[in-house]
Structure formats: C-alpha cells, structure tokens
Amino acid sequence: MASFLANPDVKVVVLTLSQSSDRQARIKRFLDEAGIGFEFFWGVDGRKDNDPSLRMYDESKRLRAKGQPMTPGQLGCFASHYNIWKSCLEDQKKYVVLEDDVVFDNAGFRSFLQALPALPPYFECLRLFDNKTRNHKKYKLAEVGPFKILRYTKGPMSTMGYYLTPAAARKFLVSADPIFLPVDIYMDRYWLNDVVCLGISPGFVSHDFGFESIIGYEQKTGHRPLFMRLNRELFMLSERVRRFFYNLCLGSKYRSRRGANDA
Image 1 (cartoon, rainbow, N blue to C red):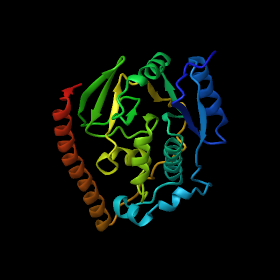
Image 2: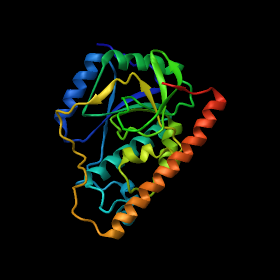
Image 3: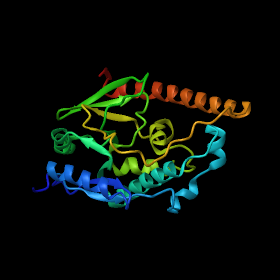
Image 4: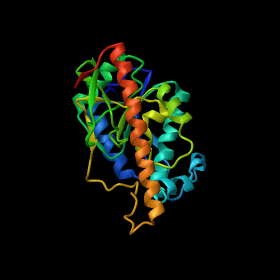
C-alpha cells in the first residue's frame, strides 16, 4: 500500500527500544495497514544505556520533591523523548510521535494528517488522545477538519501520542534541566516550559494494555519521615498554585484573542 503521508514537512516516528521486536512488528503492521509511512526512533533503555541527557538528572531535587528516586525506566523514557525533541528541532520538521504500545483509529489518524496543513502555527504541541485526568477543564480554541483543538487546565499525564513542532521542541529542551520528574509530568508543566497544554477531540490514540509497561513506576514505600512528607506536600502545593495563576493569565490571553468556549 502506498504511504498515506506525503507531506515532506511532517514525520511520523515510533519510539521503541531496540530489543522490543514484538512491539515493533505489531505497530508496523498497524501503520502499514493504515498506509501511513513512519520511522522507528530508537529509545534509551534506562536500565543499561548511558545517554548524555541523563547527566541532567538531579536526584537530590527529586528526593526533596517526591521522596524517592526516579526509576531507570522513567529516566530512559525521559531521555528518549528528549532525543526526539532534539531530532525534531534539528530536522525542522513537524513530528507525530507514537509510543510502540499504542493502538489508533485508522480513519482518525488519516484525518489528522490531512488536517495538518490547516493547523495554525501557534498550536505547537497537541496530545492525540483523550484527557482522562480528574478535575480538569477544557476549552475549545478552534476547529481544524473534523477535530476540535482543546486547551486543558490540567495535563493528561501521558506521552503515548503527540504532535510536535520545532518551536515546542525548542521550549521543551530549554527548560528540561534539571530532570527530576517523569517526562509526561514535565510536559504537563506548561507554566514552566511555556508549551500550552493542548489536545484534540476526538482523540484517536490509546494504550494497548496487552503490553506490560517497560517504564517502571515508583514502588510504594512505607511510612515516610515527616520532613519528607512536608517537602512533598509543599512541592505539590507550589505546583497547583503556579498552575492556577498561569491558567488565569492564559485564559485571559485567549479570551482577548479569540474567545474561549467550553468544549
């Protein structure tokens, strides 16, 4: 089948580890069936690879904020996406980034690729899945093709599929140091990296839960010392306050430019 993606300024990349041949074969089959051209992007295995970006990891800050270190899988995942951002900026192309354990709706994916030429440049990064986090609000900013462009007041906490421009990649790279949070949480900190948290509706990407995560989440710990719990709570409070005031300013900005309607 001929490749559906003919725009030379857009590249579909699938993040995978070199040893994950089963995942690669599976998603290649899906993308081939959809007629969507793509490239594998070789990720960092935090359990054994020593990527230069990991020098930015600040374990002392991590311990103050969360009380326990990041797992090797979380570090490898951050390094992998960091390298994607570098590649996007160097290529000066728009990327559609998929992790290798996703499923997608063929028609939705093709419609999104068709709609990309009409997407305004100030929409720098879009999550391609539904935001299922609790207690968030969403505002419709525009309609492009069959999709609503949504602004979220709270990030979706996932990197399974997203659209990335070189402008967003530059911002992510500039503010990534120090590394002390998982990459999805870092991307959600739009008050820090200045990449507005946007998504689309309907989303067309979701997880295939038949695959076990290779990221490795934090182990549940026992009773933490009081000072550690206080540090964690203070950090979380600071994040909520910064997010709240950034949302106030951002909401005013969008209302003054084009208005914001509840999606």
